[in-house]
Image (cartoon, rainbow over all chains, first blue to last red; front, side, top):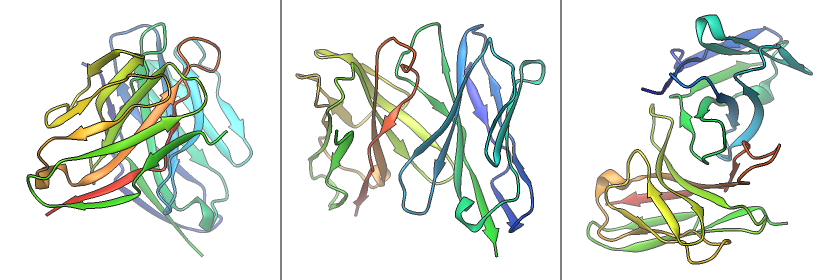
Length: 116
Length: 115
C-alpha cells in the first residue's frame, strides 16, 4: 500500500522560530518521488520541491530546507526563522513508479500558523 | 501561458442536479487529473488521463465521470450531485516524460457546495 502521513494536524509558532513539518511515507516501489506543496489562505497549491528516491541529499532553498531519509521513510520540511507569510497548509505527496503517472498521493496536510 | 484554468470558481448545487466542472491547460501537457480536497483528508485523486481519449479511475471515482476529447480540456461531470460531493476540486496537469515531468501544475480550484 502507498500512503503519506503527516501526523501534525496544526502547528502554531511565533515569528522567527524554526519549525519542522513531518512527513512519513509508505511504498514498496524502489523508484518514487516526494513533493511538498504549500496552500496559502488564498487556496491555490504552490509547488515547493520534488525529490526522487535515488537522491538523499538534503536541499536548502533560502529559509526552507528538506531532510530526506530513506531509512526512516521520512521527508521532513524545516522553515528557518518563520514569517507570518509562511502561514499556510502544507502538503507532502508521493508519486511512485519509474515514469510519471500524473498521480499523487497526498498526506492530510499540516496547518502552520505563524503569529507575529 | 494561462497555465491550468478552472471554471467556475464557486458553485452551489441542489441534491440531484448535474453539472460539469471545466478544466483547461495551454501547456500541451499529456497528463491531466482531478482531485478533491476535504478537511483533514488532503487531496484525493478522482480521475486521471494520460492523453486524449484515455482516462482511468483514481481513489474516489464514484459519482463522477470524465472524458478527454482534446489534449487541452478535461471536464469533470457530476451526474446527480450529493451533499457528500461538497468539496474543493482541483485540476492538475503535467508533462508525460522529461526532466520536468513530475511537477504537477494545479488550477486555482472550484469550491462546490451541494445542499
